[in-house]
Image (tube, rainbow, N blue to C red; front, side, top):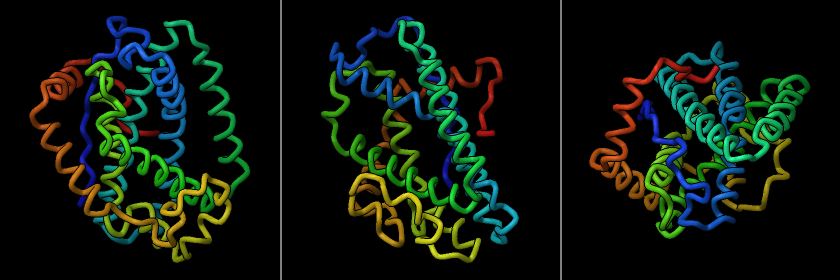
Amino acid sequence: MTPTVRNLRFKIDGTLPKHWHGGRRSVTIFLDNLSVFFPAGERFFAKAVRAHQSFMKDEQLMKEVRAFCGQEGVHGREHERMNEMVRRQGYPIEAMEKRVEAILDRVSKRSPELAQLGVTCALEHFTALMGEMLLGSAGLLEGAHPAMVALWRWHAAEENEVRRHPPLRARVVRAREVPLHRAGRDVTALPALPRIFSPELPPVGHHCAALLESWRREFDEAPVYVRSAAAARTAPRELAVAS
């Protein structure tokens, strides 16, 4: 199944309360901080995958990689907009983003392309597991502003769409004709979540597949997504694919 690129533009502006998670300061700040990592991270992931296009002989895999990069581009754009909102609230977002960019720049310059793909496999799988938690635990976003609930659930769902069997990034590694553990050998310092270290990078299970189907129905029916899609169509053209 090819990932779906949903070009959405959420209502992220000065009308949102500073502590948009139902007035809960700590949870709002945690998610605000998490958002800081996404713009540079999404660009890194897309670049790491595209670097191996010359090894891809399967047209379907190429199609899925293009869609993956498109998804990453929209994720990055919307989190850039969220980060700008947080910056206007007085947080040192620019300095924080520069630290993230500096780390990824060092990885890009000092690590071989295969290792960068391994990092991408591990970190994207980690974010997919976090996304599964968001989709499966309604209480995590209970009381939050509707625009932010929609943004985080959309991102969580799309992180899991590429965990089909075999997972997209795993198939890109196999296109290089190397074992998965070799591509990811330098990233085993990640937190000890047993499922993240499975040699096959486990795909969406039955539980998560059901969560995705439920979210897709929500996407088709919820007014917040209808408005966000309409806003994207009428907004000034911005970068919609990761570069």
